[in-house]
Image (cartoon, rainbow, N blue to C red; front, top):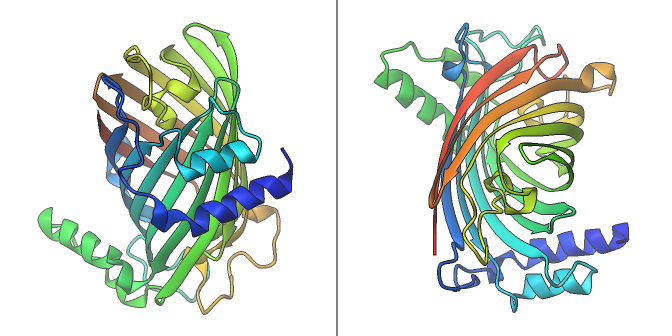
Length: 326
């Protein structure tokens, strides 16, 4: 498949989003075609020292549907060279994220990231078979006080009787965010209870611009990647999937060009300019997934293991649940 074809699909996807609806799903008997999920990222889930430094919290909601054969995006994917038998899944993700330099309010040193909140809608199209998986996505959202991140964190700290962050009054100003992104995942089968995969991610836009490479492995009882809950593959199955319970570990490296949560004045990237090796990040992600019929849950830990212009060594935990239905 040519690069121009992939860009055409991404562009068509971005302009045709309003035409999608929940009616564009399969209705086969005994086939799960929809899923709702919720995930919460927070430093409080760390096993060691608790801190709100750098990435403080995230609230993520997904609503996912499997597209039927006559859907226009399914047909468009076939016209661009994807297989007629490929599974096509559409995911709507909305997330609110807050970034804080702990209790520090002095932004003049340049050593701490500024207070920032983002509220984004990220729809994505997953096209997969047992040989590979493509993801094409877009991002639309806002940064600043309008995101509501300050209100959410203040409300939570009121609930647990914790001090509020005075630094939110210095948060980055309101800004409209946009971008496109994509992933290519290649499974590397090994054993029935262990497999490997590579995942390449490219993100472009004024929200974030970076290139990331992941090498991962799964251990446990799982379905193939295109049929696994890991990438919403448990939807649109002609027969019910076997239950899954597995550990997944990914090691990642990321080269960052733009991150709007670090832009201190207008579009100027004081922290990231000029582009140098301190804009490189590396770390790992470890999660345990369980999926039994309609219900699923996961717990994960993400660690940024490098000191960089984007953040210091930092980690956070995540808890997620999902429910699949017809």
